[in-house]
Each structure stands twice: as C-alpha cells, then as structure tokens.
Amino acid sequence: MNGGYVGKMLFVDLANKSIEEKELSEDMADNFMGGLGIGARILYDMIKPGADPLGPDNVLGFVTGPLTATGALFSGRYVVVCKSPVTGAWNDANSGGYFGPELKKAGFDAVFISGASEKPVYLWINDGTVEIRDASGLWGKDSTETLDALIEETGEKKLRAALIGPSGEKLSLMSCVMNDRHRAAGRGGAGAVMGSKNLKAVVALGTKKIKVADPEKLKKVNLSITDSMRNGPQAEFSAAFSEYGTGALTSDAALSGDSPVKNWGGIGVVDFGEESSVKLGAPVMDPVYKTKKYACANCPLGCGADYEVKDGDWPIGETFRPEYETMASFGSLCLNDNAESIIMCNEICNRSGLDTISAGATVAWAIECFENGVFNKEETGGIELNWGNAKAIVDITEAIANQTGFGKVLALGSRGAAENLGKGFEYLQTVKGVELPMHDPRFSPGHARTYWSDPSPARHVKGGMGLAQLQADDSKYDISDTGVMDLAMTAGNELINAAGLCLFCGLAGVETIVQDQFEAVTGRLLSMEDQINLGTRIINMRHAFNLREGYNPSEQKMPSRSLGEEPQQEGPLEGVTIDHKTLQSNFCKAIGWDEETWKPSRESLEALGGMDDVITDLYG
Image 1 (tube, rainbow, N blue to C red):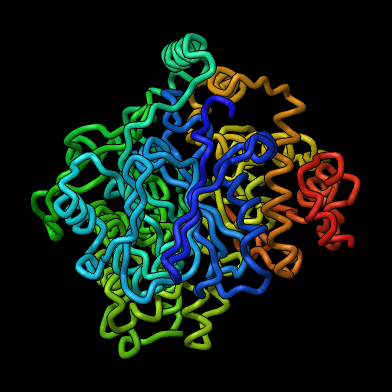
Image 2 (cartoon, rainbow, N blue to C red; image 1 turned 120 degrees about the vertical axis):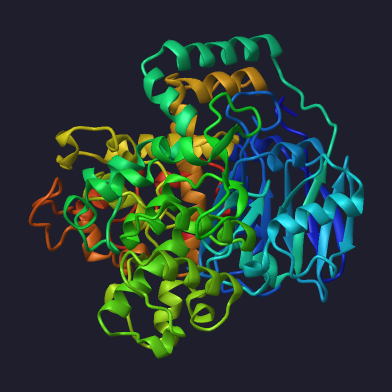
C-alpha cells in the first residue's frame, strides 16, 4: 500500500451488530484518493437507489484522506458522506479539528455504518479494537456534555469523537455532525442520518504512525509552505486569516455585496450600512471577547479562536468565535448587528448540533414571512420576528434547537417548514431544499454554477471559479468561455477535499501544494493531467449517484434574487444579472455532460476509467 494510507476500512451494521474490516485496495486509492472520492465510490456500491435517507439502508461514512495524520500541513480534515434527507441525493460535508487524524491513527482510513440500532449506541475505536457500546446515558446530552461524558466513561482524555447533539437525535433536517466542541460537518442533514441510526457518536483513540514515503521531502514541503505564508504572494491575506479567521472580512462583505442581506432581498450599503456592518467583524469583536487562538490538527494558520462573554444579555462564559458564514447568516441576512446575539446563536447551534448556515438562513426566511404577514404572533408563539430583533433571533434559534413551539416546524429547515405549513414558498432561498450559503453569485458569478449543479448543492466550498472570483475584478462577469477553467478549478478542489486538506491551504500561496504533499507522503507523482482526471473522476462519481436517484439539477431552480433576475437598483451590484445557464453550459462542454440531461458521455467516462459499473448503469 502506498504511504499515507492505513490500508483498512471498517464496515459496521448496527442492525445485526456486525463489525468487518476490509482492505483498501491500491486501485481504490489510486482512482478515488480519499475523503469524498472513496466515500462516493463506496456509497454508490452500498446504497440501493430509492433508499430512504432516514432509513436503515442509508450508509453513513467517515472518511479521511491520504495526507491526514501524516504531518502534512493543513491536513486536519475528514469527510462525512451519506444520502441526504434534505435533497434525497448525494451528500458530503467535511470538518476540521482533530477527529479525522485520530480516526486514522486508531487504525482505519474510513468507517462506513449501515443499519439502525434499536437503542442508542456509540462506536468505540481504540487502536484497531472496535466495540458497539450502549449510549442510553448519552442520549439527550448536547455536544459538549456528550464529549465530557465520553471522556469520563472511558477515562481517556485524549479521545476524539464525531457526534450528534439533540437536534440530530430529533432528526432536524438542519442537524450536523460535531467534533471538538465547535467543529462541524455541517450541511445536508448528516446529523439526522446519524440520529436515525440511533448512533450518538463515533469515538476514536489511536497511536498508529502513518507511513510517509519520503519524510525528508515532506519536511521540505512544509517549510516551503510556512515560508510562503510569511513572505509569499498571499502573506498579507494569510496573516489576516491567522489573526482574525474567516471573520477578517465580514465587516466589508455586506457592503461589497459579497454576503447577502435581508434574506437576499436587500442591499448592504442601503439596508445594513457601514455602522452596523463594522460591528460584526472579528477585528472589532476580538479585542472584546477573544481569549486565545485555536488551530486544527497540523494547521500553521490557526484561524479559530476561543471567546468569553462575561456579561450583557447573554453571558454564556467560555465559547467560540463565530465563523464568517455564521456572522453573516445570523447577522446581515437578518439585519442583525448585535454581535453577542450572534455569538449566542453560534453557541446554541454548536451544542445542539445545528448547521449555522441553514439555521440562520431559516431564521431570515421566517423573519421575512413574519414581516409580510405570512406568519403571525400566534403562530410564532409570541416571538416578534422582526428584522434586526436580536432577542427574537436568539429566542427562535433556541426554539429550533429545543424543537419547541414554532421552532419544531423551523427545525425542518426553510423549505421543510414551508411545505409543512403550506406557505412562505415565495421567500425561500434554497436549491433542492438546501439554504444558500453566504457568498452572493452576483458578486462571484461562478458560485451560481456550483450552487445549482454540484452534486451537493448550495455549497460555497465546492471549488469552481466562484472561490477565485471573491478576489477578482470586473472581468469575472465575462462568462463567454469559462468551462475549461471552471472544470480545472473544480477538479483541484475535489482533490483538496479528497486528500484531507483544508480549503485554506490556498492561503499558503503555493500553487503545487497538493501535488508536492501527495508525492512526499504517498510516493506517487501526480501530473497536472493526472490531477484534473482524478478530480473529474470524483465529481462524476458523486454526480452518477444523483443521476441514479433520478436527480437532474436542470429541473431545480436557482432563487431569482441570487441571480439578480430583478437587478439591484443601487449599490455595488447595481444592474448585475447572472446567466447561470450559460455558466453551466460551458461546464458541461468541458466535462463531457449532455446539456439537457446532464448525463456524462460514455466516451468521457471511459477515458477517466474506474467506473465501468457506472457506464453500465447509464448505458447498459
């Protein structure tokens, strides 16, 4: 087996309590690398078309990458994969912290869990020894309480756990998988899948050393990364993220048009304004609340921070700095400039196990519905859901987490709530039921394509041109010939996720970072052609899962506000309309998908290799 891999995968069936180890083949590693790549390949084989996402036939996977736990910088990520209860199709969500490396050191590149237990359980993985243990005493505890209880029960202070809070137990469609108290595999309802299996946690503890093909080369690569972070082209940006995290630019985002405002219907400079916007930036919040920095495993950036709120309306004590997406979703999206209310909402979501993007966006949707008379005070339980009402925003977030009153309906997410109530559809900002994240395609047009057509829709971290356009000039609005570049950037991002790297490895300013680290760790050289083919194979594998489920993205609609189909009349995005269909057409031509059915051509799949069964399923 190549360096970088343990060479073993774990398969657990909770229904019959079976535990099986299988070899990770070199073909599997070579063709799909790790993370969402191996996850997609395994789930395509294991999940039958039409399986209920919240039924026992769904499979939940925790997958590391070849760089995980090797000492490669930025390699602290792992990926959760499953069939989404929100979209009914493919889902992947990744997280940082320390769980991914610990799982690998405990003896496995990946864990796949099927079936459902009759009673609450957790999976205990200790240096290759695997047990299914009773979790009845953990059920009902929040994410922090659960981790503390696991440490006390096992006596192992160094264990790491991927777990669910009460929201996952209660099958909230916005629930996520938490680790390290505040890191989350957040999107697509993976926490509900875990809850449906009565699985409270996957707990890992290990001492295994992961083989590295060329340790000296890896040291040199790591040194080049840290040197570039200090002196390279991204040094200033890297320093800002190291100091302030993703909140470094939050204050500017609403004003520039990057972050959406007022449930996507507002204009930052008009509806939120500079006075409100500046209150939500980490440079303003850190001096008041920050106690120390936080870094994930093997991270030279350290973009996280611990906070402490001692007084005010929500004196929660020790907590964590909200990320950009959280500040924007509970902030500008709700016209809320009260920083402490956002910190409180972040704490509620972390403890309950809620995706802060979907939770904040669902609150913003509910506010607009309330403001326009779709909901009244009687329906909301007396909560005055008005724009900028900080107390109401905290109260309704608590109700969502506890699933009490109106919060029980909102725990379904905005689309689920609209379907349950039979109203409010006109204000939804979702794709396939998933709330849009906090980067506006009118500011970075490439995001319109990824939000609409990625196999896990409405994700800002899925690569493509959108991420690069966050720093681009007005040339980004020229979409006449975007396909080849869009595919190359998408494929590159697939590799980052599959390798176990953080997206912020790009802040190192080393263009060959994945190639250099992968070669040092595995001993395998990836040419540029190899990288594009590997990344393209992975996205096709995820896409094939959806096609088999009958999911054609062309049948879904992008929210018109996000495209500027009624253009803003003032501000930095004045007059901007995004032609997402042309962006998709360009991408389809580059990747080899039919522009109407979005079905990959036989020739393109044959050229990539590794998917003979997919070709048979699509073409017979």
